[in-house]
Length: 459
Image (cartoon, rainbow, N blue to C red; front, top):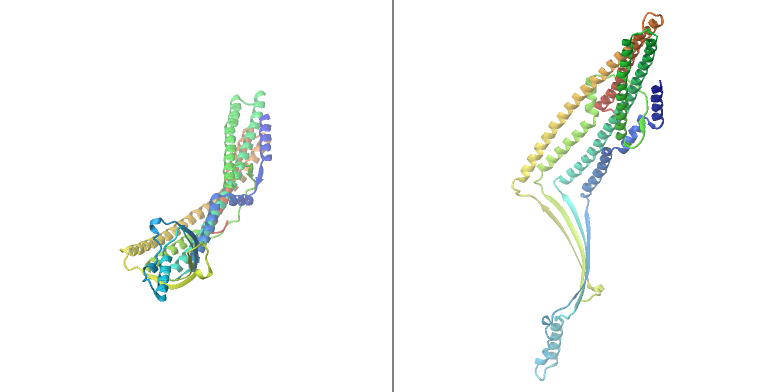
C-alpha cells in the first residue's frame, strides 16, 4: 500500500510540474521551429529573387562609368632638348616676314619640348545602354523557367509542411497512447497488489495454500517490469515529441483525449482519382517535367542569332595642368546593333539538344512512375484505414465482453459460487483488452491522417 501511494504521489508531482500543450499549438510550434521547413521558406525567397534577376535582363541595362585623374611627370635631363632659336640662323639683314616666321617656328617647336615636372588633369564619363532585341526565345524561356522554379519551391514547402503536420500529429498521439498504456499497466499492477494482499490474509488464516500465495506474488512480479517499461516508453515518446516541436529543453507534455475522427466514406477508385488531381507531389513532378520540356525546346533553337542594341554617350577632357576649364571638355556618342550566331561549334549544340531530349524523356518516365507509386500508396493507406476501423469494432466488442465477464465473476464470487482468483483473472483480462482498445484508436487516427495526406487533403 505504501508503494502504491508513493507511485501515485510521484505521478501526480510529475504531471503537475510540466506544461501541457494541445495538438493545435503543437503543430504551430513545430512549424515555427522545424529547420527543414524554415530552409524551404528561405528557398522560396531565393527563388523570388532569382526570378526577378532573370526578368530584369529583359529590360535595358544602363551603366555609368567615370574617371578623374591627376598626374605629375618628372622627365630626365636627357629627354629635354635645348630650346631652338631659328632667328640666329637668319641673314644679317632679315626681312620682317622672315623674322616673324622664325619667331612662330620657335614658339611652335619650343612648345613641344616637355617641361619637368609636367602636370596634367583628365576627366571622363560614359553612359552606356544595352538592350536585348532578339534571343531566339531563350530570354522568354528563361523567364518562364524562373517562374516554374518559384512554383516548385512553393509546392515543396507545402509538401514539407504536410509532412511536419503528419509527423507532429503522430508523435502527439503516440504520447497519449503511451500515457494510456502506462496508466492501464499501473492499474493492472494495483489490482495484482490488492489481490496479493487478500491472498496473504487468507493464507494466514489457512484458507489458501502456499501455492496460491506464490502465484499471487509471481503475478505482481510479472507486472512490475511491464509498468517500468510502459513508463520508459512514455518518456521516450515525450522526448521525441519535444524534439519535433523544437522544445527539447522544456517540460512540455502533450495533453488531450483520443477522439475518433469522422469516418471517410470513399471508394478506392475515387480516392486515386482525387489524389492524382490534388496531390502536391503530382503537381511538383508535373512542373519538373515542364521545365525539362522547356529546356529541350531552348536547345532545339540554339542555332538562332542573338541580336542586341548598344548605345553610349561619352564626356571627356584633358588638360596640361591640374585645373580643368570649361573649354577643355569634349563629347561623343554612338549607337550600334550587333548580332551573334553560331556557325559551327564542333557539334556541341547537337549534343546539348540530344542531352536535353533524353533528360525530357527521363522526366516523363519519372512522372509516370511517381503517379504509379502514389496510386500504390493510396491503396495501402486505404486498406490500412478500413482495417483499422474493423479492428476497432472488434476491440469495442471485446471490451463489452470483458466487462461482462468481470461482472459475472464478481457476482459468482459474491454468491460464493466462484473464487477470488476468477475475479482477478477477469480484471487482468479487461486491462489487457483495454491496451488493445486504445491501440486500435491510435491506429484509426494515424490511418486517417495518412489516408487524407495520400488523397491530397490538407491536414
